[in-house]
Amino acid sequence: MWRVVVADQRSKRDGRVIETVGHYNAQTEPSTIVIDEARVRDWLDRGAQPSETVKKLLKTQGITA
Image 1 (cartoon, rainbow, N blue to C red):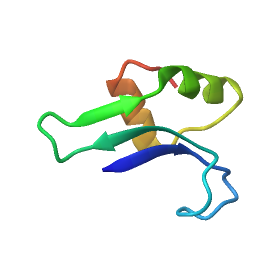
Image 2: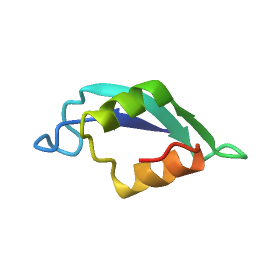
Image 3: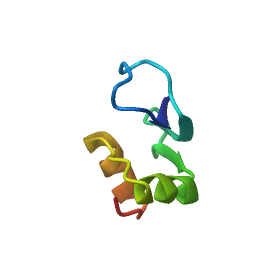
Image 4: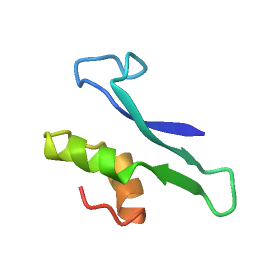
């Protein structure tokens, strides 16, 4: 299970996070993706840049980045 988080780009990859906005579990059938769309949209409106992996998860959930 992986968390979808908001983090400062200057932080280490496994460092301090600002907010957890969802989670993803690829070990279930089908995969479980839970994203707080309102919080993600808020962060994207503020200029947050999702990673390529998160972009794919958002696209799967119908959230445009």
